Image (tube, rainbow, N blue to C red; front, side, top):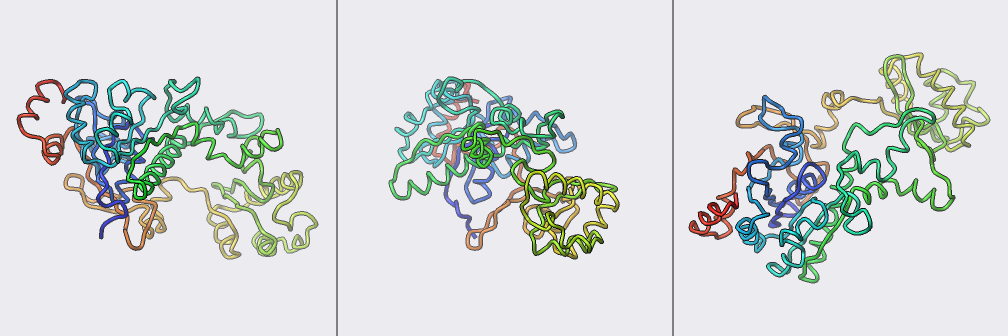
Length: 396
């Protein structure tokens, strides 16, 4: 069955994560994605965390499976000319270069829209396309720092930390794909394409809309997470067990008697302050101290059985290996097994969206650099003479 974006063609010029992952989601929703890469070098993501047994990096595989690879040097006129032929029949051009880069190459939104008025020109940047810092370059960790995420990590008085995932890049990719899909929907009504801009900074501010709203309305920083969340005063946070950690997402009043049974403290059912969902900051600190001692008396597995029996809101803190070994991600297609022509059966990250009428998909095809250059250009109606002329002029 065709996907929701069946018939949409995306030209993905982007690199690393913010742009490529957005284009990857468009692929999983049904679009055809053609990746345009610099000859001889390709996406920078091809060079980060190389997996020698597979001949590719984890970054490139994760963000570019299912795309065809075309090499074009857009900095030379022959490469630009070839690219514009592809733009004629494309729907989206997606990039994440420093603002102004495509303009310098003669590939601005205005110039592409002259070739194809319906084109959607979508760009992700570090700090946004305009403003005093627009031309600064940065990647995920700088994005985390720019929006305040790092400053809110850890415990008061302790060191700051980044996150163990590319949070800023992933938020940027989500916003980029959302903007593209909205622009495609608008084009159905107007017939016109448009420019879409997102940034790592904007994504990090949106990610923390609650915390920023608190600051803007009260004048006070929400503060650091301290093992939970600075604005959630409840039985909420990470608690050590005898051999791991449990994450508690609060205990509403109707679940409090069950919690007391789980910890074998029936005398606390009518506790004057602990038996409420949201409590004062001071009471939350008392509850945290109490439950830190309680949870350390048993293993994570033992607590999981007790808490699940009482329908508590919790989850053991899992490693990536723990998640891969569990059944739930496979049941929903978040992880899946597919055979690869060279690598045999492998487990792949799937699409996090399911749709009843237009199913999402994921592919295990990982293109070699420039593997589809001639194929894609010939499909676009380019003659062999032009191919040879562009090749000799350094287009790829």
